[in-house]
Length: 382
Image (tube, rainbow, N blue to C red):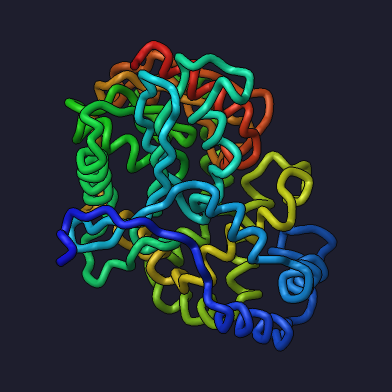
């Protein structure tokens, strides 16, 4: 009998019939007319997404990419009634700090494939053994190879509690946490709810609102407010849809790989430091690897529901965080954080770095900068 706390090895192994069905759907895509502009302002250009889908059907080699992802040890374990999938790469170096890294939407564990090895074995990558980590990267509930919730209630705090149980189950009484996008929200909640075990948190999407203060905003605050307005007016439609009618959206995305790809890849244009085109910063294979973790698992609905669970005053908790906090600010992040605003809820910000390049998918886009900043912050919190 398998115990409910059992940790079971896992290998990504997508069935051939799933891949055959994908290729068939791609080749039979019913395309809309092209956009009426010569840029991305109406959405993903038809010419490019057609080209990507042709490659996806006839050139992309999933088995090679699957093997690349399977080079990291993976497992599943049942927590709070849900099977959670995670990468668990242990360091060969004594004194390594367990580091829990959480992705967001439209990301996945694919984002971290370039940073796991240098974090786990810094010596093999020109670093110091004293900076080593045991790396744990779970797939959020309803994302990738984690199970899909069958009841409501899987919001940020419940995920944070599940992650704390995961770390305890792995035998890690003290650990660091890192995250971007929804991973930042989960990491923040961990810093508040599991402070007795969390050595510190490092986040790349630091969301905070301007406190009610008299006077005009500073130049830094004015830039941040401008960015928030742009996001609200022009870049947040996806979030509103996923927060209000995720099920309606999912019928199209689950049926059409072209639709699923376009829905995701638009964000790799909008949110990366890519000089106007996502393939300037990430390869086509890397972009499709991430899309595949949504397509082959049919998680368009379950991943979008995290927005439904999280938005609305009755669903959100604003945490006060006292554990050591590090913030890495990448210039093409969705919104630029303001330290003074953050200090309202984060009372122990000990590290603040402003990067020369990079965007929302920091570990994916700029792995060396990401690794260096994570090492620098946690060097004092081991």
